[in-house]
Image (tube, rainbow over all chains, first blue to last red):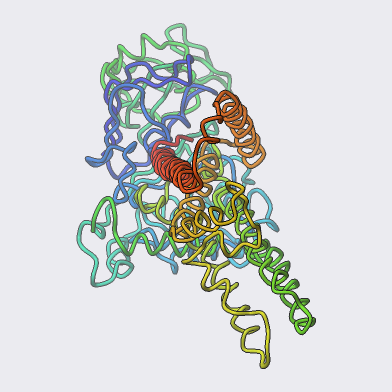
Amino acid sequence: MITINNLDFSYKNVAVFKNISLEFKEGNVYGLLGENGVGKTTMLKIISGLQFPKNGTCVVDDFIPSERNPYFLQNIFYLPEEVITEDTTPEKFINKIGVFYPRYDYAYFLNLMKELEVDPSRKFNAMSYGQKKKSLLACALSLRTDYLLLDEPTNGLDIPSKALFRKVILQHCVSTDLADSHVSACGQNSTSDTCGGRVPTIIISTHQVKDVENLIDPIVILDHEEVLLNATFEEISSKLYFDYGSEKSDEALYTEMIPGGYINVLQNKYGMESKVNVEALFNAVRNNKKVVRDIFAVGCEQ
Amino acid sequence: MNNTFDIRRFGNVVRRDGMSYFKNFGWTLVVLWSIPILHWIMVYVSMETSDSEVVARRDILISVLRLISLIIVPSRLYKNVNDSRKGMLYSMTPASSLEKFLSMFLYCVIVTPTIYMLGAIAVDTLLALKPGTNPYDGFILGDLFNHNLSNSSVTINYVGDRRANAIIAEYIASKSLWVYRYVCILCISSIFMFTNMLFKKRKLSKTIGILTLVGIIFMILTVVFTVNIDYEFLEDYTADELVDYMIRVYDCVFHFVFCTAATLSIIFLYFTYRRIKKQTY
């Protein structure tokens, strides 16, 4: 589990987070949403130990990321938004870094590359941006880390590739033979500490909410210096009602015109069921920060 | 397995850095090595008439090339380590900061000079095996652990008196200067390792610029200091007293340079390790 407590962070004099507290529970695919510059990437970097908090704590499974303990590092992988590749092929690249990860699975990597329709023996330099991104995604998934942090993973992907992305992420999470492959990848000499495979926790930071709408649950919405929302779809739909109708509602926290009518985001006073629209949710939260915080009143203790 | 150091993990880091070493530095090594090899071949061809000084020059040649390599290696191998985008993978590699630092130390301080020494010994040995009289007498091999100024063709006039000069030269020759040489190698490497972690762009030019500036300041201070010394007292010294004095001066300078180089090495190596540990991206 990732626990962030009273965390402050700033770049020189520009405050990014002020006294925020947040939890990421195991085995979920979190959607980390927020406007440009609210600190989504910074949050991922703090969790992966690439940035250090100014105050407060960030703890990942009893490890403090800023200490860069090797056991912590072999259980987490951060895939940045910007594709940076070496003058090599994906298979050479993954073999080079894979040796450091006890649950790295080369066969799984090859399967993923096949599924994502990228040739693992082709040089990165000869690939398109989307192919590079898919190759690196395959690399990241094949390391089988407990925590996988993906920063804008669908940026630059074409429509079929976005569908493939969702497919491999879902497969990765529900893979039933995960534990078996962990054991086989670790070998007989490995200890349970390094081989205790778990259902991975994935945090996806993105602007493209529609690309990951059916993938993420729970959702974390960051705002300037604070966390606006950290809730599961179940919690969201129990507290907010997404009305797809032909008319605008005066009571709506947010209204948006959609083909054939409007989508109104209302407080769910009567316990009605509705399908969460992440984009509308995001705008509703952004425009009614205090109201939404009062409605949820949990998850983001400021 | 240990958090700080684990031999298997360290082996993986060394292997990864080794692949990078030959990929990023291999061609530079080939180019740099081609210069002394060409020199050897030329001397070999004209060996019958070669002067032993020509052969001795290869020591200087090797030293210069080794110096160039020591300066280049950190920025070639670990160029992107402190880059805010490209360096993330290095930092996220599941190995401790100590293991990463020791691997860096291994390639920058040990492997590079060793390649030059082994190469020089190998070529010298091949040439020494040539039948007949030739000037290859294992000079470089002996020089590795027995460096002294008497090997040099330069005759230094320390005090103007021939006998006194000989005594001073003998004293200096008796010193184990090879330690001094390796401390200097360590110092140069550690400076360039640290500045490679410190500067993000134009690492070499910035470092060389700063070193030149420091050198100029040091020279000015030395001149200012020595100009004000009254040397008239030396005129009253006998030759033996002069020798004693010169040996004391030599010892002072030697110890000052040795201690400074050793201290600087430790400081720069420590801060290189700190940079690896605390670098943010």
